[in-house]
Amino acid sequence: MPSTPEPAPAPTRNERKACWSHRDSYFACLTQKGVTIPPGTDMSDGRGPIGKAAKEEQERLEREKKMTVEEARRQDPCLQEREGYEINCARSWVDYFNKRRVLEERQKMMYAQGEASPLQK
Image (cartoon, rainbow, N blue to C red):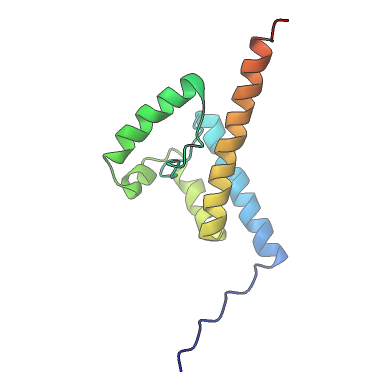
């Protein structure tokens, strides 16, 4: 009779705090370096930036396709912070937080574009 694997226990409060702290450090480093999308993040679902940023991001993705995900990750300007982030957070959390960061940056750009060119009535 096949046995199903035991599910991993939910992270403790301290483990979650460590994850969030490392995530915040990593994202602060990316922001400081002007990086919107963490290197190696799969944005093939079309939920990346818009406008000029979308064009630049598309060009970056085309270049990145030529290299493996691991090569892209090694070029991360915040590699040390990323390692702490990935060690302290579950893989699914890392994927979620990375995509959420991109969405938040996209929303900021949309709001900035809206404020720069208000609708004329």
